[in-house]
Length: 126
Image 1 (cartoon, helix red, strand yellow):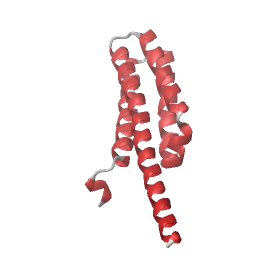
Image 2 (spheres, rainbow, N blue to C red):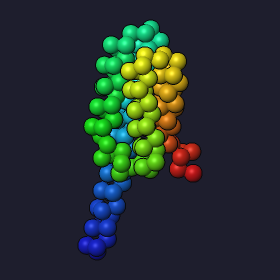
Image 3 (cartoon, rainbow, N blue to C red):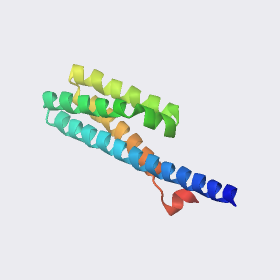
Image 4 (cartoon, one colour):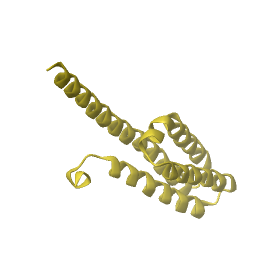
């Protein structure tokens, strides 16, 4: 009987950790998405100081939770997001608004797809 309760307790703990990971990842990508959106708005207005600040915040937020994302997501996706952030920094240094906007849209699409793919919904469980 003790083995039964220990296995139930372990199952509950694993499910709780899984839910926490999904919640934390969604919060993490939400912060990065907001900062990249603000950077894109600043680029459209050619306010490069705002863009630099928001891109720095996005990069910091992305790297701050790297261990969490690395444990829950495929590394190819993480490498792609890193490459897109690097490209955004390159276009920021050149102050190329259109190229910056295009890369920002690709990064936002990737991050939104990650957040949606990890969210617990009935169609993700099927």
